[in-house]
Amino acid sequence: MKQEKIFPEKFSHPLHLQDRFGRKLTYLRLSVTDRCNLRCRYCMPESGIPLRPRQEMFTWEEMERLVRLFASMGVRKLRLTGGEPFVRKGIVAFLRRVRAIPGLEGIYVTTNGVALGEFIQDLKGVGVSGINLSLDTLKPERFRQLARRDAFERVWDALQNCLEAGLSVKLNCVVQRGFNEDEIVALARLAQKWPLEVRFIEEMPFDGQGVRRKEPLSAEEIQARLEAAFPGIQADGFSGTAQRFSVPGFRGKLGIIAGYSRHFCSDCSRIRVSANGLLRTCLYGPARLNLRDRMRSGATDAELARAIQNAVWARQRDGFEAAKEQQGTESMVRIGG
Ligand code: SAM
Ligand code: SF4
Image 1 (spheres, rainbow, N blue to C red):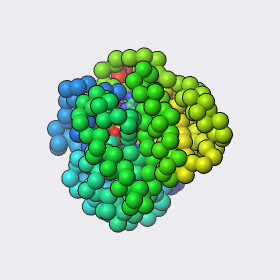
Image 2: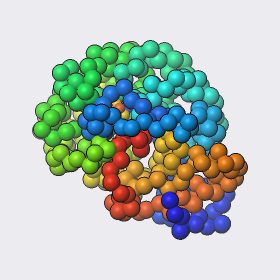
Image 3: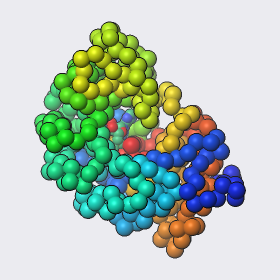
């Protein structure tokens, strides 16, 4: 975690969070736990990932301090992810507290939906801006093979209950060659029936085992499948990392995220913090800063801000450059997806 490139003094305004390529970082993805109630095969081995001791994890109070600091530095969008955020007790109280932080304009949660059901009304009450729900198949047996747990019905019910409650929903579908590629069209049709965005994600090599199964189905291939099924489909610009599409007669939208091909680095605004306090300036690269240790050894907000600015300034041009510095393959459950 060596930092050779130092954020220039002339930019040291506390609101500034910018890298040396001029990209402003305004979107924080905070992993609140490395625990999960599923074992998705593209994310971790069947036996799971060795869990870190609880005392190594950020407390909710530490996370709140950090979110406040990031918001004061220009972060406007916060996403809670994991691991599975809803397996950690106290998430609703945390959401309520961070909702009140000045500067934050949107708070989102990414979840596998298994434990989501009981939280839907709370999420609505807190005013969460949107839920990203991961669902890669409409077939219960296939779900069990993929997630190694039998939970399709719970996720399906949670999806419908979120829509009924009027929550904004994006469905994340990781497309796996030879496994669920035959469901692209059926999954896309959910956006015909319901006002949600169905986003197809290229599979990435983040299963924590370094096992590359097959060359992933590319964004172009996914798009070709959608174009063949929906001739009126129209590209509709980018929303973050997703190329969006609209289809005549659909209530919702479609999206493709080129997570493997990385078409989106040139205007990436994301910064990630893992549940044990490691800051990453790129999903594909190594951690750049240990915020937890600095906070626990008494760093002031100004010292933390300076260290974050330096880490951000040194960010690599793109995910391919960043990946050259990464050794081995981490699991998404640890990085924070
Ligand atoms: N447990 C929650 C969930 O599954 O939504 C949040 C964390 S999960 C790591 C966040 C997102 O990363 C999910 O949409 C998941 O499908 C995606 N993901 C995990 N491993 C992936 C991989 N190898 N390639 C592409 N996406 C992946
Ligand atoms: Fe858990 Fe999400 Fe990883 Fe699946 S993708 S194992 S639900 S963290």
